[in-house]
Length: 233
Ligand code: SAH
Image (cartoon, rainbow, N blue to C red; front, side, top):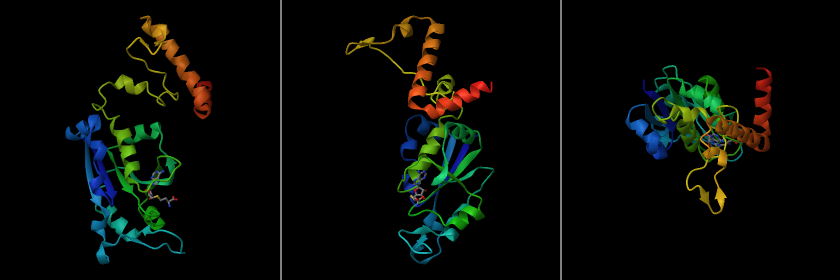
């Protein structure tokens, strides 16, 4: 079944963009996922198709009007898909959430611009907010692409080797071990012997130790969560 994505944006021409390339683009061509863009501006019945207005209470910037955004949402066939507004106020996207989203029938993504959406449309349409990290972008389009790229590559038949997906950073709660390829010695640096030993058990043990080491040093937050999960069995 095709993973159906609908993108609500002021810049439909931005899509598929990078999502039209490589494995994600091939998956789009092969109907593993589909992409529908809705131009928010087309749903404005205001003068000059205006979509924004000044913030109530004053202050800098502009706010997307609730009536225009709601009219765009209401034009989409929801079909049990999560309705998400990319927003720095949302819960930060994680691999666990990405996996969950990849198992839904698809997603509907709203890309904000200016100061964002009028709060009332978020409430009235039961919109979930999702952030891609603690920094501010100029618009939600790149954030929507981040979410889509992460979710689509998990769809069956997209990444080719499902085993490589299982071993990746975060899937086990740990960062991934280091990778090496030929040449065997490069700028006086050799590939660790154990990786060339042909001893699969030893390789696995080495990788696990490296993953744990890296996670401990670089991401104490992940390490703590990993240890807690382990204790709980
Ligand atoms: N005034 C807002 C930021 C608006 S940025 C605030 O301080 O919260 C304009 C748009 O960019 C937002 O509506 C949102 O759709 C998108 N955006 C910006 N940063 C984002 C982030 N970290 N994650 C997801 N979307 C983001």
